[in-house]
Length: 310
Image 1 (cartoon, rainbow, N blue to C red):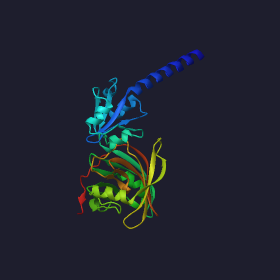
Image 2: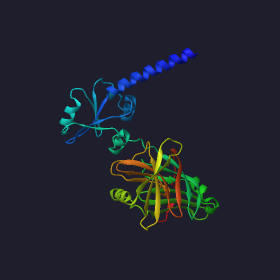
Image 3: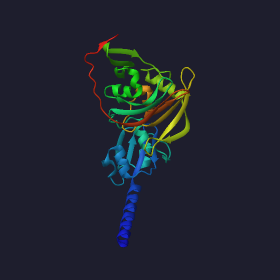
């Protein structure tokens, strides 16, 4: 058994050395027209780079330079790094960068589109009006958030007095579908707003968020993953202090120019400098809205029979 373990360790070591040697052969040039190229020094393996780019064909050519120009990825086998740098308008020697984050670069440039599945978001709420745990859905395809009756019952319970409530956030409106034992089925639309953003004005909202909310440097674990959430501190339009905790978004990302896809309690997703974040918590002097779990889900609701009040 000991000999077998030693053989395994030896094979693993030889494989690792072989991969390291192969990795050292891969050169990466980050290029931009009229600005030249930078040489990327990365700890990522060729396999990891292939997975991130979703292009395994790009790292199989020996002695080729992998050229990354925004969302254009290609192999260059004829030009040297210095010649590439000059062709892109660079002067002197190309710089070397060691802190390049390939995934964030691709997200910022919206190179790899996310699948954006419908999300089921579990929340914990604490406010003067009510406290409890519930959930809602965000659908990017339908451009809406939905809280089913079951979720309302979890928050309000006996206070609903026999009513059922289903509600949507769409087109900056709160659309509620109420089934009342005496009044019957009623639909009502109300405009919604937030004291931190003006719904529908993405460019202004992003600039406002960046201006009014600053990263404090504090971080904490993101759910049950190895990633982190980061704290942002600022104030709303009334001068009340608010704390945002922003976490990674994984398979949900907003398109260029879109700032937010927020659901109930203003939890959901927002994009800063082209990178989508999950709004994991919003808290203030008397409120705390927090996401406790995120998963994929689906929902259906039949609006037939509801009479509009407006």
